[in-house]
Length: 211
Image (cartoon, rainbow, N blue to C red; front, side, top):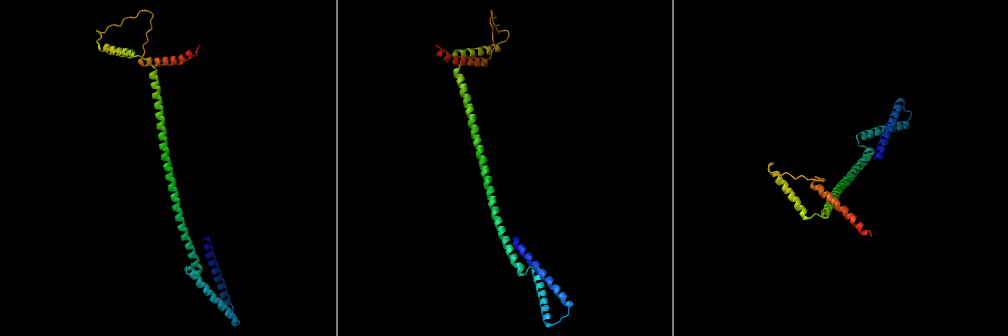
């Protein structure tokens, strides 16, 4: 495309140069007097050439000269081809961008689902481990049914005691002697009992190994 523009520019410059030369010849012809017929014929040819070049220059200016229209047609054809190629390339680029976007979106969704599944399995495993540990702790507690009956009876007695008016409540007997009374919650007792059972279970195999 650049070469065609350069060729058109060179053609115009060449025509202008020849036109300027013809104008100089005409000026010289007007200043001199004709000496013979051959000289007049030569000068007449210059005048004809001048008018010919002038007409060609006007044709070029009006975009009618073959030196201009033919390269211009090639230039327009090249431009048309470039526009078509650019349109096709644009379509390919848009397809590539669209496919890349869809791939990244699908990858992000798959990654999200994978992370959700992994988190669910991890959480289920932790909960299952906690449940198993609590089940082992429950099985390690050697608490007889009588102990639970006593605890329930104590709770029932406490509720009955609280429901009685102060005048009908019996005073607790005083404990004489060197005794220490601990006021513990049931959960504390269960935790202490669990720790004792675990320590006993850990010590028992060592005693069996000793001679």
